[in-house]
Image (cartoon, rainbow over all chains, first blue to last red; front, side, top):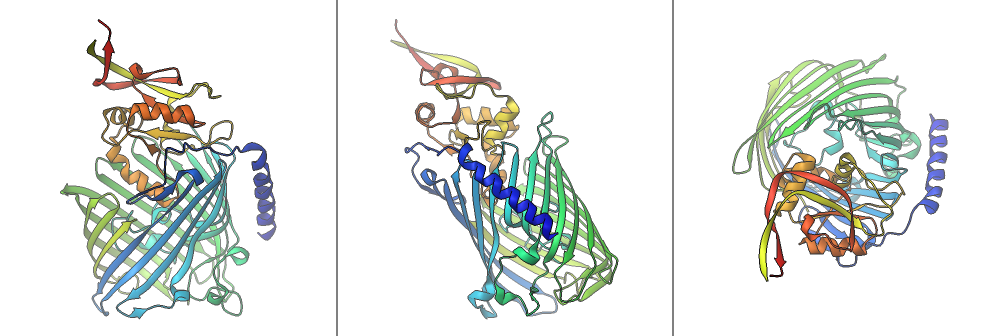
Length: 366
Length: 142
């Protein structure tokens, strides 16, 4: 794995070297001055720089635990494109920094969520190197609170199913075939060597203490739009989890569907993961529908199913069995960057995996 | 002098008159304006320009390319923002589009045919589904 990634890194650096001969300095018209737009950040066209972010405030009332109100996420995006074929992106996040349980230490709540550079080799071929969101399904790639319809996250998209961040190289190719635009991504992760997270969060053996992360992974995601407004996706991922004990390799197969038109939306993800040791196998899916009911209020309904052996935390505790979860919710989007959500989660055999309760949140791009 | 109203059933896709880009198809145009395609065949950055969200020309252009009204694409631009991609610059008038394109390498925009002048070159004609009547008032010498 290390050799493959080193080779990929050499290829990537060679591509970057070729940038000087291909790129021209951009001369954006000076009449476009720096501007702040609510929900789109501050844009400085002359520097091809954009700075923005979002916040998410949550209230969680679990049936069997103490209520929690928190500034759950405060994220800052920096997007910079110094040359036409180079694009840098960073997302820094403070997670659960202030809550009814107190104020967290900066080192505990701060994380680098994404940090990568894109090299645009052509208008349809790009190479990404750094830390990026693992492209399995749709939810994980667009998980920011202002983009999703519920405060809680489907189990099949959680990091215990597959680690949400990858560290390595991703090659993306976009095809143009009769307006169907298939997109193909192939990625190589070597988190064991490349994860930029603080050494403080690793134990003596070099493993992350509190997070489910890759040791290494190879994956692919293919997106295809068979008809207008419908996007379908297929994912395959083979990976080894970062853990103190030796674990066997996991294989994950996923399917996703996303349809959206005139305020209505339907979203589905399915994944099957298997490993030959105690990690076992699991199948999970969710189906979510959105219906506009007037005054920018949307009715949301989600059904989730999970069956098998599911890791519950970084200590490798597991849930074994079958669980059904149902979430009726409302979301109010009075303005494009702002969303207010309320939901109730209930289910069967869900106490350990996704406990019942009421959740609400206010989130906004700034 | 008198003023007459012309009816437009197509938009002109224009670039600077000295642009090296000579051809484009509808799918490429879609990818430029939804920013899936950020560089051209020469490796240079595309700079697409839009009119304001309520402008009839922008509405006709967006419906023709993306089969949606501009406001329906806001959720798409929210997702792109999260991915670090910003939407096309917005200017206030067709004259502003012409001025911007004339002075910015690789800028591309759309205008009503009656506003075409020597500062720009037509790259493509885009038929629109609904005729735009009130945008093209021109002065005619009696």
